[in-house]
Amino acid sequence: MRPQADTVDELMARLRAKGQRATSARRAVLAEIVAAGSVHLTAEDLARRIAAQHPDTHLSTIYRTLEALTQAGILSVARFRDEPTTYHLTDDVHHHAVCSTCGATIDLPPSVLDPLCRQLLDDHGFVANPHHLTIGGTCARCAAEA
Ligand SMILES: [Zn+2]
Ligand SMILES: [Zn+2]
Image 1 (tube, rainbow, N blue to C red):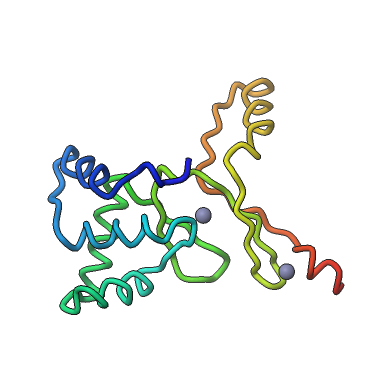
Image 2: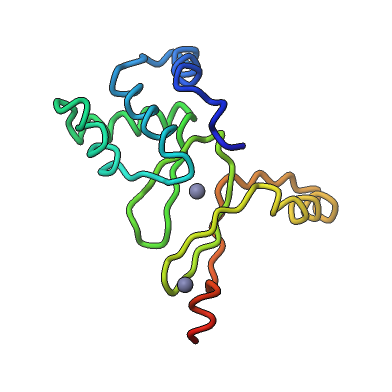
């Protein structure tokens, strides 16, 4: 599910429902992540974007905010190879095919794993809950150059 329907207000309400404070830094971080859509932002990316509107927000505040939002289950962490940690909405279930040669990334809908999940359930009784999977390989351009 892509996050369009997930307004920042709704996410903030969910944060309060979990007994977490709805600070302006938390709102600013969530607003940037919702606006970024399928692009995953690092803490530094977020700090740069937020500093444009709130120059007094320190990187350490961004890190603490990301930590709190991740613990509350609103954000999830995604890592690509050896790149810095990025963050996305937990509701935004999707997967990526990543070229191990050039790093090109293809966004995949959650349904691509439906056959695998069904097979795991049928054959093993295993209820798979893949939330953010990265599939390595070679993109068409790199394959053509090889
Ligand atoms: Zn992703
Ligand atoms: Zn490639």
